[in-house]
Length: 109
Image 1 (tube, rainbow, N blue to C red):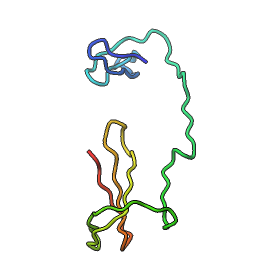
Image 2 (image 1 turned 90 degrees about the vertical axis):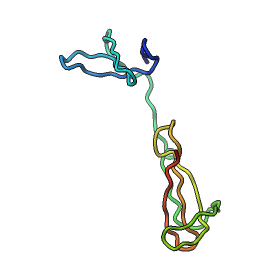
Image 3 (image 1 turned 180 degrees about the vertical axis):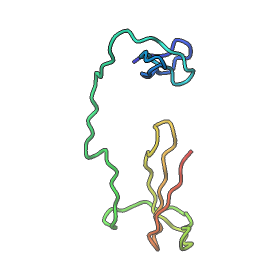
Image 4 (image 1 turned 180 degrees about the horizontal axis):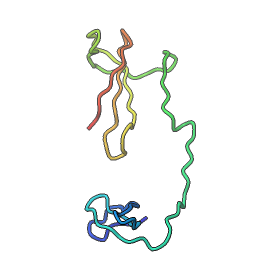
């Protein structure tokens, strides 16, 4: 992994217009010429636990909160959060009405 000499951000592989392979800073755009090949040194394996599980029945107790359902107007909903975007961004909050089972989300921020 290489970091930018100007701003310290992580650099990523890129190709210049003339075909030259370089490392380019994601933040400031500075480039470094590659000295050799790029190699992957670690493979990340996904497991079944990495998948999002959707629970469709009432077999698992869910926490509830005071939240107005946009469909029926009921003011109680089950809630849970999922990290659906980058790790440095807020998690997405999901709600499911305890009365009509309508599901909606709120993007954290």
